[in-house]
Length: 196
Image (cartoon, rainbow, N blue to C red):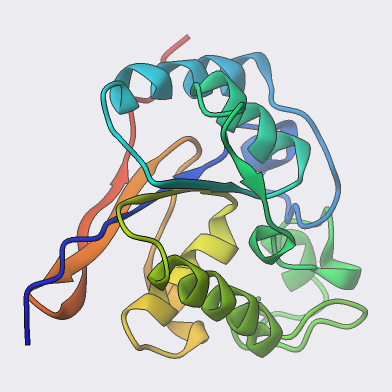
């Protein structure tokens, strides 16, 4: 089998008020904080000179603004498959708040009333991967923590639940690719954290 060279660059959006407070932010369309805007602008320097055959972005404002500030807003295509997990009744709540009523709760192992199952999120992630496979060249994705973590698990041939093993900071860069013909992680959770 021949060696494969395509890379998927994963960018989590910059900081929002809810990400800073560790609130589950699924479909609530909230903006970046000033720090999140600075983080996204710094991505432009890191990505400068990189050529991508396709740029795909979640339609939520925090991802679109990160994409724009990073310099790719004019070339990005929007995809609902990159929306964040629909957290249903857990939207806007922190894990600590939820565990006050459900001590053993985990988004990875508990059903999500009025939201998406982890299998549904995995199906969306798999559709993105299938679309990416048809592209000749590297692909840049702007999205959200849980969908990108689940996409990574699917890329590696793991079940969606394995996304719990991959931590992603705001405005982080991760790169998926191949070692010869085997799908692998080339870089993970790289951040140029803004200290202001």
